[in-house]
Image (cartoon, rainbow, N blue to C red; front, side, top):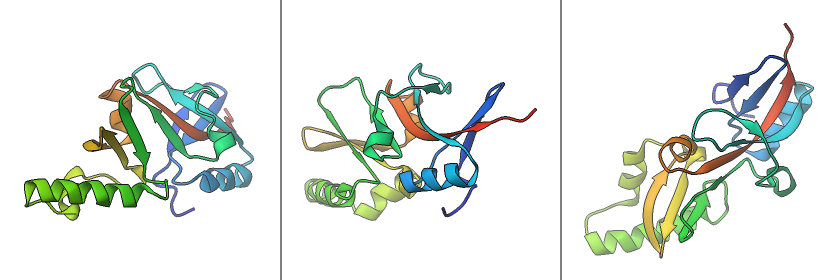
Length: 155
């Protein structure tokens, strides 16, 4: 795992959730090294309150996170997906041709988003937004599911 600086913790009375792993393998490694339990949590109340869940099947699918949006026509592409960059470049090229002045580097730079946290929202082949997990939770009315490590909390 690259750095612990990106990890986020949620403290409760008897345990701690550690989240924001770049990859599923990073979460597994962290759980093993820290004697923790690999779990799935969801942010489904529009706030920063993680709840244990299995709704997104993250552990079975070995994915670090997934979002669920209330808009049925939207397609969501995650930065951890192999085809994410291919789709992003293709869609951005289409947009560049239409606007005749946009470069792929500009759209990524303008978003100020960490590379592993990018989520591409597409509606009918058009980019709606490039966003983050945090923005999904608070601004888009979506549900965020993340793999987490549950650690015992010593008092």
